[in-house]
Image (cartoon, rainbow, N blue to C red; front, top):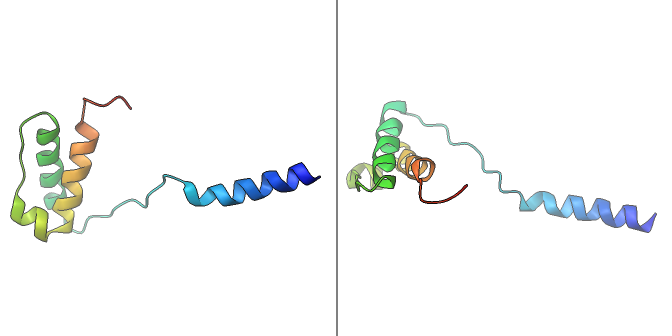
Length: 77
């Protein structure tokens, strides 16, 4: 019985350690896509970034990081 209780507590405590992140919902899909494409180009070795949009527009910013991370072929996932 004690082992079951410890197991349940362990499961409950580990729920907070999940890598799940809430998905981003862009307001302007075309700006998000532009950021995604630029991030993807960067991941393939052609550094591309609109610094004004990156600094001032969350859709571009999130798109750029998503594109760079998803198109990165150097890491094994």
